[in-house]
Amino acid sequence: MHFHPHLAFESLHTQDDYQYEALKKLLVHVGAHSPFYKKLFAQHHIDIHNIKSLHDLRFLPTTSKTDMQAHNWEFLCVPDNEVKEYTATSGTMGRPVEIALTENDLKRLAYNEFQSFSCADGKPEDTYQLMLTLDRQFMAGIAYYLGIRQLGATVVRTGPGLPSMQWDTILRLQPTSIVAVPSFMLKLIEWAQEHNIDLRNSPVQKAICIGESLRDGDFELNALGQKISEAWPLKLYSTYASTEMQTAFTECSAGMGGHQQPDLIIIEILNEHGDSLKSGEYGEVTITTLGVEGMPLVRYRTGDICTFYDSPCSCGRHSRRLSPVLGRTQQMIKYKGTTLYPPAIFDILNEIPFIKEYVIEVFTNELTLDEIRLHLNTPLPIDECEVKLRPMLQSKLRVMPLLQFHSAAVLQQMQFPANSRKQVKFIDNRS
View 1 (spheres, helix red, strand yellow):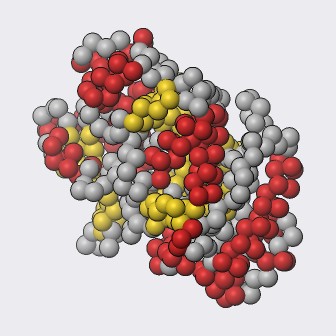
View 2 (view 1 turned 90 degrees about the vertical axis):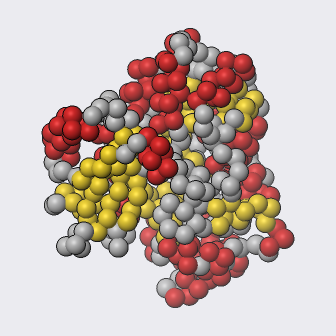
């Protein structure tokens, strides 16, 4: 498989034509080589030759993370000797899933991130400081590395953690860009302010932000995005991706959603009944991978709640754009008659200056209902913090969670459990 230069689709119509041809190849591939899809298509009496257009995708059954967890190796479409790398999901939503990549899949992954960094105004003369892990089977880290190499830019692999080490490297090597989790950027800002580093004159001009949303549904910066941009005048670019989809949605400078890469992925937004929704309507992101050899996916429900927009973007691209993630279907909390998603609680806590760190826990109470406990760290005396915090939570959440206060060290242990690749801010202990 050879990856062509980015297809300059002139309209959504030409995108659809290209995607349909790629879909036909995908269905032949999984129909011949995937034990899982062979069985699934037989169970549902699917004849792939009856799929005559993208619109006919709706006749194919959907799959989910649960299917991949239960039948992981049945998704593999190539012999073991063609697998050149094994990556894995983080395991934050149950048992990790292994994703096997062929040599061509690794090339596709590099091309995907080359496109993403180009979309985020990346140039060969840039130097990117990667503040994330490149080990522990983490696909994103290796994808960014490969994409930046393909862009022709320079990479500094500092890895995660330690603001002092990150700043020492920034000041020595003068990177123009960083790739980081937004909440870690707040720690970089705090360290810089404490050590009299002039953020307005730092060499870093842009940040590719991973793992956390920077914007609300109207594409305005949320509390986290505002805190960063007020202290550090960077150009911020949000990204959205998952290990299973092997493809990223990245913002351009317009900041109006993550651009789909139509030559690499088909997206549908589905409601709970599996019906396809229109632009502007929120539902579950469902993806079909194009060009993947090892573990391709057909109509895979990601669990993420988003909408899409297909109006032209001011950057000139004609691809659909994905909104920030509203929440995850599995993380939806029904609490005292209110439906909540963790990101909405993150936004509220990020706005409160006297809450330094937090973890949200949801569990099942004695009435078998969802209960929320906020684990918090504050520099204030606990009584004073509670007096200030309760009315804020009541007015913004309309419900009052349980509160539990901890030292910074204890909260650090909760956020970074042993062997975790990512910071944990939501714990689901529901039975």
